[in-house]
Image 1: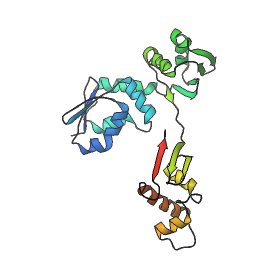
Image 2 (image 1 turned 60 degrees about the horizontal axis):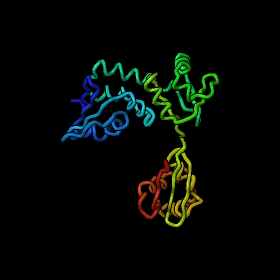
Image 3 (image 1 turned 120 degrees about the vertical axis):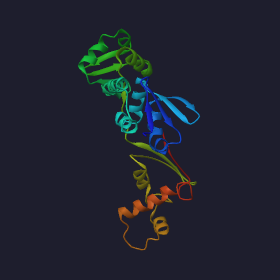
Image 4 (image 1 turned 180 degrees about the vertical axis):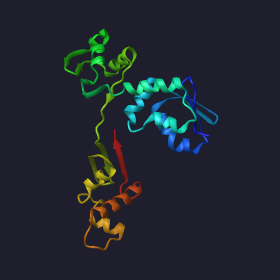
Length: 235
């Protein structure tokens, strides 16, 4: 039996004692659905257009439709049709600046131009770009209700990492943990050649990039010990 049960009223239920659900599905469902109830040993979720669009902004790499297909015996036809519609609307409007949206559909752009409430907030059109003033949440709320279309928020691929080794702090921008650590290697009291040789018992003269990554992996696995006392992502 599959881990999830999907009902025609857009409710998903899952048994808490199902290991596959807890290990692999709990997180995605929290992103793509509204948590409805936790009753005894069953978790229940509600699929809404807003929850789908929020999920696609938060966790864009997850193919939510495929995830549902793989983990339920059957998706009711009405549910699948509506989810496919919601998914198809995502990405038609992309936030590309603090006050700028890019519209990738001429038909949708025409709808926006004809919407009085939206135009009260728009101060300029430039081709497929819209420049707006005011609360972005209000703008998106009107898009949801009047045009059934969300805004896709582009996220920086760079993450800000904060390091504190007890004696100094560092702030580093990098695409992942490994690159963040490597950027500090050689210029840090803890992330350096002497520490590498001590930790790995490395006797060879040459230190390769692979050796540095091995050392960093050890540091990452012992993130709460004397190597690095505090490391966190600044959101």
